[in-house]
Length: 244
Ligand SMILES: O=C(O)CCC(=O)C(=O)O
Ligand SMILES: [Fe+2]
Image 1 (cartoon, protein in one colour):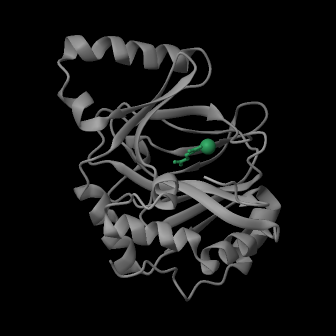
Image 2: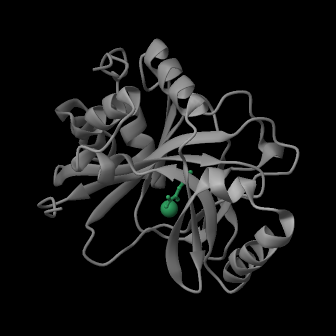
Image 3: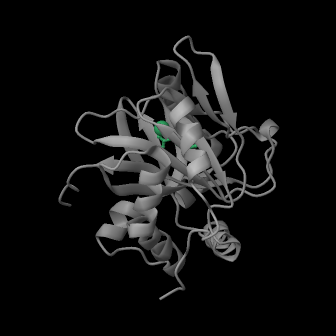
């Protein structure tokens, strides 16, 4: 069992709650105790068993990331074409993940640090933080995944509103180091006209929270990005937690 991963006890959420109420989003720096954020970043950057997830012909698909990396270019190209076609036609994505919530709930997380991160998102302190930041006392639980975006990965415009999921707010606990906007992977919030309301460049140990539904995207990671964009992304949800 790894040590727990803890929220920074020095944070006062009230000023962020005001920003959230005013603009529908807020960014909280240093959200985790720093050594815990470092531990999580190290576990993610050492991890070799990522799923590659993509939307293909309207279906969510999961692949073994390491196997996809080993494909010869001629065999990989048709896959990439399908992924790009999806993005052209409206909604598409390509990135890697560890399904923290789905695997955690089934007790299938093998990595002790990821398990500690899952436990954090199950804790009363985490749900309390969601309530305090959003002002939504109806929040009862959170679900999430760990994600890695490498060059060429993206998530096109969508609003996170899914019938029956009761999502109050989306959160992105960013764990990316040594990044800048030029590298892409920017969480981009849009207005109704499609103009950019806010661009949140990946930053280590920063939590971004935004109201659902709200149009947003993760910009494509550039070919010259160094390293990868790591984040735990998920939702604070209302009501009864669905059975597995
Ligand atoms: O990683 C992010 O910044 C946002 C991810 C997102 O929008 C989603 O998973 O729905
Ligand atoms: Fe989203």
